[in-house]
Image (tube, rainbow, N blue to C red; front, side):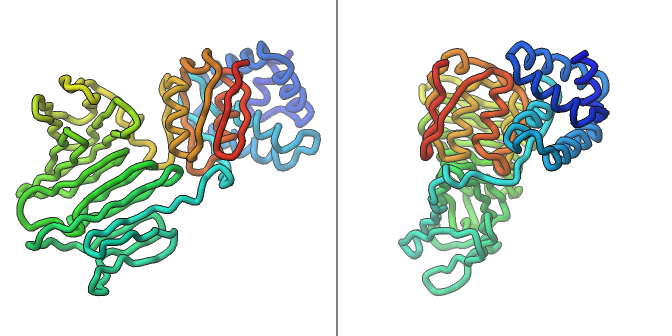
Length: 370
């Protein structure tokens, strides 16, 4: 009987009373939850389309707004279970609010050598002025756009510091666009020289769309490693609190090198290295897994919780303490939107695959050992 009801629900044919019975049945035991997921998988593999997915979510939202016998929170939890996918397909879950209580009011800071000061970047229009009072860059919400210029004078550097919980974008004076992830420090010339390399420095994570200039190679320096390009799209992850770094090439070609080794990448390849002096590891990858953060999403593909928790810590400016050893190595697949979701929503989604309990105090999340 219950399988027939679930099938009716997934096809938007169940009455409110039948939906209520399904949700009560799911909540009754972990075995019921697993059976629901299994039936959901079968339904996805045999009948779902992109339009149907969207329609399903819209129908769920209508039910959430209209149902009186369930609290909004409980309906939201089950709606999430229907939309998230477990090791198959791609489903999206969005919420309209962000829990600002977990995010400290850290400011994005621009340090300028020419004025020898620091500017706190606010999320409104605020042009960047040089020491002579001239506008050198426009600021529009989450982006700074420098004027298209070059110079023969000595290079003056600007440095953007992006705090945890925020992302930002900068368009450099050569028209290169750089997307900066949370917890990133990016140092770059206010104006590139008319001759020589276009040298920038990165600590953290960034996605580059480099403007091609055959006479002036673009070089990203990460500690003792250089990533050299002419014109291309690539992602670099090099946080100082980790030991593993990577460069993923989306388009064009890049040369990754240090004093002992160098590797030339072609599209859909990833170069990995650590802080030891060893050759770069080269492998074929799905670049979407490494660049989706630019669009406010994390795509998970059999990702361990330990990896996911690090991303969530940076995205929401929280600290996650996991005391659940089973959860630490658990793998998850799906897509989560960290720009329009709260940390609670995302954790509750993950709970539907592997149950765990957690508490939140200030910006600290503690997952119990169960």
